[in-house]
Amino acid sequence: MFFSETIGQNEVKRRFVQSVQERRIPHAQLICGAEGIGKLPLAIAYAQYICCENRGENDSCGVCPSCVKFAKLAHPDLHFVFPVIKPAGKTTVVCDDFLTDFRNYVLQNPYFSVNSWFDKIGGSGKQGMIYSNESEEIIRKLNLKTYESEYKVMIIWQPEKMHNSCANKLLKILEEPPEKTVFLLVSDAPDEIIITILSRTQRINVPPIELNYIANQLVEHYEMPLADASYIARLANGSYLHAMQIAEQNEANKQHFDSFVLLMRTAWGIRNFNDLDKKGDALINLRKFAETMAKIGRENQKAFLAYAQRMVRENFIYNFRTAELNYQAPPEQDFSSKFSPFINEGNVIGMMNELALAERHIEQNVQAKIVFYDLALKIIMLLKK
Image (cartoon, rainbow, N blue to C red):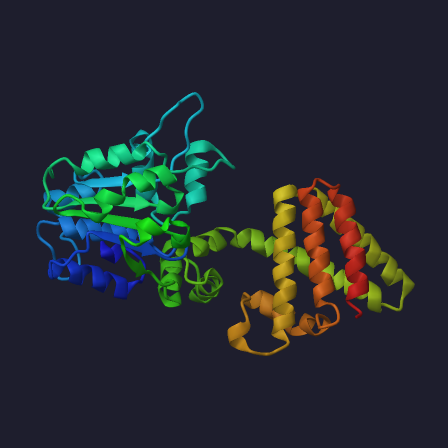
């Protein structure tokens, strides 16, 4: 993996390259920051650059035997430690039991979350850890001589998931590792790492990815217009992982937007139509809305209610007419330009509370048709406040 394949983060790349060129590589580094900003691909690119036999000015050569093996994450002097889930019926488990799966997962897309990794290896809802006996494997591997490179590199992904007994057994080797050994700890939550580990590492804070880099990557990967990519980049708040999730949910968001517009326009109409026939038609439409929402499934219902809460919040903020505070797609902005005056100090909290309550009711398996019809009636009352 090359530095050029990671998105943005030019200052962090420069720092890593400089440490290698000046032969001042700290033996234990904690690479930390928010989820999805590229910490793991940066660590792998850094390890490849350290081991490259013909380094360029800013990146690995890509053609030496070391780089060829790194392309498959199969270099004998590159070691991975990561949280795993103990299979049923097994008393012990180590990372090497899942190493092939982990390599393939990283090569497929290095911007992924720990929860998606757990879902892959253990099924939805299960949580893993770096178990106590992993420390013995780490110590054994690092006490071996290097096979091909000058350095051995141990990448520990999600060290905050490390069992305390495992972490405590690593303190000595982390403080005084064998010669030419580099630890790269890659963390989403450094505050959850035990203090004795933190004190033995040099911390490198990785910032959010610059928005223009995320937008350009989305244009290239998803072939979307730059305006749409820029909007998603703003919503992602510097995380390419979150940007991918938003892009992949884009079609669902369009459906949520249509449902939100239908709900709000119909509710507003019932409060403001003087014609009784129009009011009756609108009430029938609200009943149809509730019946339609009841058929889309619980997860989609929850997703719509979360989307509706965001839209209410954005419509309230839209009233301030401050562009940098606005996080809406062009169709959403167009709707808000007309609808936002009806979301104000008098009803915004009530509306958010009712949407959140409906979401909780859906989670608790309350009948969806009743939940959405009741929600619609409450919104009718709130829109006039």
